[in-house]
Amino acid sequence: MGNRLSKIYTRTGDDGSTGLGDGSRTGKDSARVAAYGTVDEANSCIGLVLACMAPGGTATGNVIADDVRALLTTVQHQMFDLGGELCIPGHAAITSEDVARLEAHLDRFNETLPPLKDFILPGGGEAAARCHVARTVVRRAERETVALARVEEVRPEAIRYLNRLSDLLFVLARVLARADGHGEVLWNHERRKA
Figure 1 (cartoon, rainbow, N blue to C red):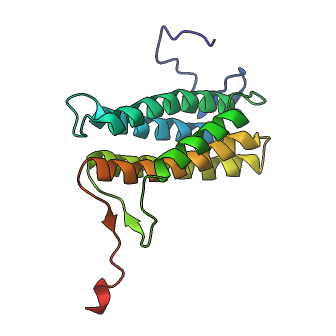
Figure 2: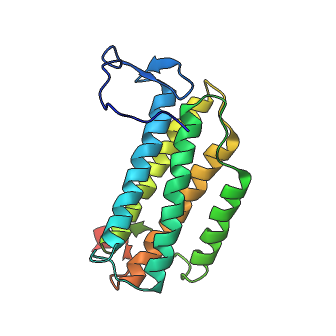
């Protein structure tokens, strides 16, 4: 386990560098910092989904919401693990089993949805819209991690995890839009012809 923070500011980053988990320092604009920083941002976006699904939040308190809450809480812990993996060169935290579990959840939630015939616009109620934001940030985290992998060693499990998570968040956005009674917002590609 890492060091406890007793003091939040250290002034060690004032020169534009930051400390990695192994004690080495790198530029704050490095590909590694961009990757784990975007993973952190994505995790914060998932926290916003959970916040609006909490008791008293805007999302309905039903069995689907409870199931999604439990899953996204687990995902937040895994995202923190993934951030640690990316912050510590050579560290492994995400496994193939983690990816397989995401795929199983993806299949389970997707089987209840009708097949897509049109593109979906981000929306469908607050929880669904926030889920779409989280999905797009996870996609950016995936791109940043791929960029890092072009210059440094990155385990393929990290990239696969982010790829499956963005797919899962898309499916969960669809599920939440339906569960909240808002429905999905379909892209109207015919609107310009009228």
